[in-house]
Image 1 (cartoon, rainbow, N blue to C red):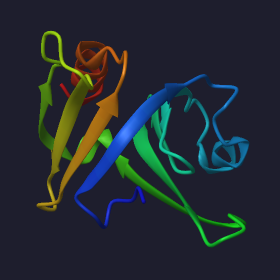
Image 2 (cartoon, rainbow, N blue to C red):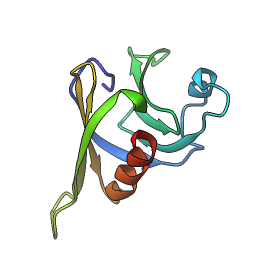
Image 3 (cartoon, rainbow, N blue to C red):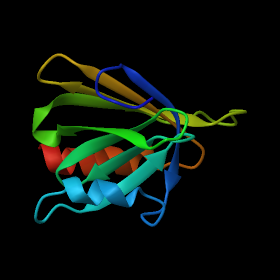
Length: 126
């Protein structure tokens, strides 16, 4: 489950913009564009040029979907952890602390350029 009510999301893998749930675009405002997208088995995490959108697919059929978003303007600070050398299961991690006191941690699996995510967030926050 990915949302901004829990502290962690694990095993996020990169996906192409074509694999991104298209219904999320209905939430985007003028000028907002998706930049990066990731998924778990059913859930997705979308980084746009304005905010982070978490998509939590619910129920057995997956027809019920919960969308949560947090603006980059609410990010107080963030940290990244890069992959280790020669790890059996390479992963990297992003932690975001928001002005409301909430901290979200996202663990990425596989070949994810966590430094690019850090640069992107820096560009939107600073």
